[in-house]
Length: 72
Image (cartoon, rainbow, N blue to C red):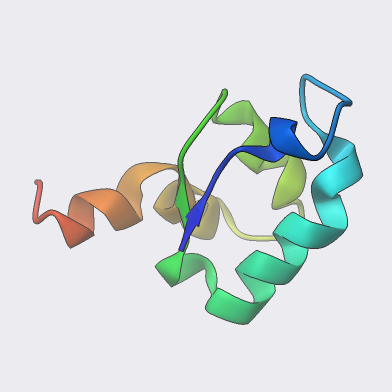
């Protein structure tokens, strides 16, 4: 699941905390091993994934896409 475009429905930049319920639900339902962050600054992931491990956050920030595309 690509998670991006929060600015289309949340106007509270830079971290779009207004979308927290949505992003947390997406990560919860798909799991951090199946979510890819796709826009804005990766710092947003840190805000929206509070409570997740550093490893899970790193997966969403780039680990999953590298695995998907078989990049080392």
